[in-house]
Length: 113
Image (tube, one colour):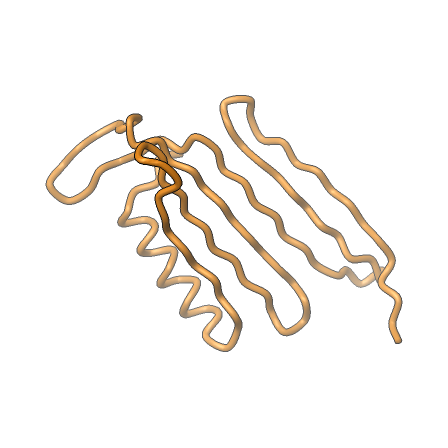
């Protein structure tokens, strides 16, 4: 998947509109001269969480135009969690890179006080 700055801007707007009453974290930064990272996350009132982290290699430019530069992600990491009707909280951590999609799922019983 090729992620462009236009798609990132759309994602930011979409997340902001949907989650206007929730905490949203979003950061973009350079981790080295050749690598840029994009991170965002949120948590809803009912405890659902989502976090994403994408790393780009500036040297892997796939296309160039006046409007945008397309970059190939090095690695895409994330996690999300939710509590199901059966009383378990499920946490799914994953990464996708040149080795494919690699999920890791855990579950534990939620004890209500």
